[in-house]
Image 1 (cartoon, helix red, strand yellow):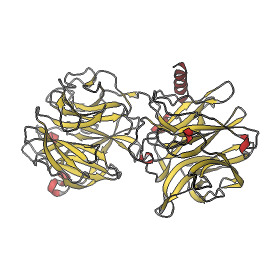
Image 2: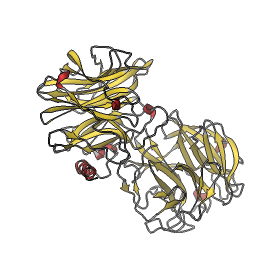
Image 3: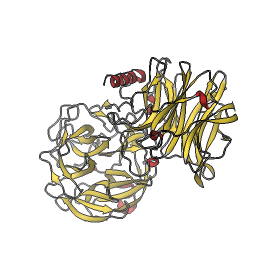
Image 4: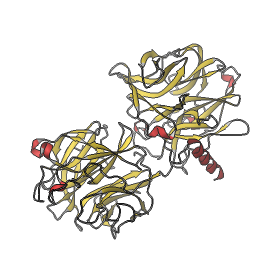
Length: 635
């Protein structure tokens, strides 16, 4: 316990921000470079495997908030057309180089090493020129190149498949370089999977990284499949030895960093090394997930997040990486969490990870709360869906504008009212919105209301609008969830049936079959259904706080006594009942986003708040006056 505390303490002191880990969400194979300009530069694999991007910031923790600058995209066909992996940025002889891995569009597992070059002093400027394949002396599966210099000689380290195709293994190689674009002389194999912990799932040694300290060269590498079995191994040689002689190297018989159940970190690997700005503390940068079990191919799971922690040094001069440190609880969210700066009527939030910008987005209904002269009904009509963005994993939000939603004239066109969106991501990566649409602006509640399905490839622009055929043409507030056995389920408010909650099923998010009433004991709207702690939960706005239901099968629901957020809170803008929620499950934690009318019942202004949920698996609780330390991790 003391050792673990010391590692965590050292990590926090070195990195600077107690809420640093994870540094950057959904960025695997991270390489961080500290430059003379005082900035840290990050290159990493993006989950789409289709581009190379760079980030920079004066601190490690700032990399998560830094804008991602795309410097190169994959080819539409031929070589460098697939599996863009493991980019590394290096400054060599006054030029910038990016070493990366790529497959062919027509043969995606024909993986090879490639190089980009840029002569600009600033890697975010100038032209990145393709310098072609970095030849290793043998044409076979090869990846994860890195380079380092020692005693005036530059070396290349990389991963390549075993010469014997029957072995189906990848090994670590080293060679001298005669230029940043080529190696000279023979390559030496330094390591092949020998131990059982290197052969779990696959026989893998890959992703080498070099650290020269204390008269030795330490080369870490990753072993086994890219799931919870992934772990770091280490090779060691004297820095005055012949590094091309395999006998100069010794191999650690056990992993030097592996999954930690206690800390909730799984599959740590593919690392790089950097230091604190003063150069006094060495930092290990790596990726890991915060959950063990993965559905499907681990390479398709997007949640390998970039993390960092300080390295301790033993008395014998060898590094002690300890255990991967736990994710921090997050930063304290303000009260209110968000107010719309234009119309001050933010309500009905839905929060989703935006992989295109690497940040969380909030879509919300935005009523015309501060527009004078509007009738009691008209003020909640006539607006578009607002968007807010968080660059610190959900604790703080800023206004971005409105979603570009195109609706046909039969649904009101540009003059339609847009309410209560829900957004989900399909397996093919496309996003689907289920939006309540009112075909105009009205002064009564007698008009029709529809749930409309739209799609988007970037989360900003939405089209292909179609009305979802449901029980009646007077429905609002869709909540959509994926079912474990496949397909999707939508819950919604049927206003014609005493505002009961109904549901419908779909195999593909396009074709829907209405299944009738799900909840009828209590009128309510704004249902939110989610799975957490081995149960299904439904939270609905019953206008006296939030009603809560639990289910084992998402079909049969039992109501929890009492309502959440019925008693006013003490925080700013939180002294009122909570309404129309969204819930984001983040690892083992869950956060409830809701809105309030802070000036009391009958007032128009509204704001968004957040509270962390607690549960024993049977009952949901929400202590709205407790500080909400928010950390949203994409699932």
